[in-house]
Image (cartoon, rainbow, N blue to C red):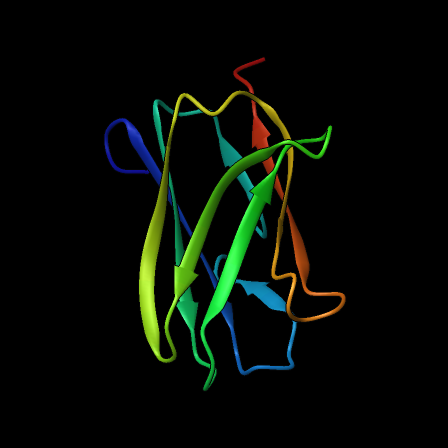
Length: 102
């Protein structure tokens, strides 16, 4: 956590492997005014990573060319569970848990 910003990293190792969190906490972060999901595509193809809320609503998307990194920055993401997934890779999904103050 840096000031009012929380950053959590994720990566796809290649074009067939599922997503993985880079942090030992997995996908659990505190509520923050600014949340940055830092993604790394280590595959040979472009990948689009989608973040969805519990009702399936689209919260954001990050498209990364091969061997590139980038950020999906979200403002005031409320506490709850979110699904981060790569539709091009079956079974490639992570759960982001944003924990409230209580």
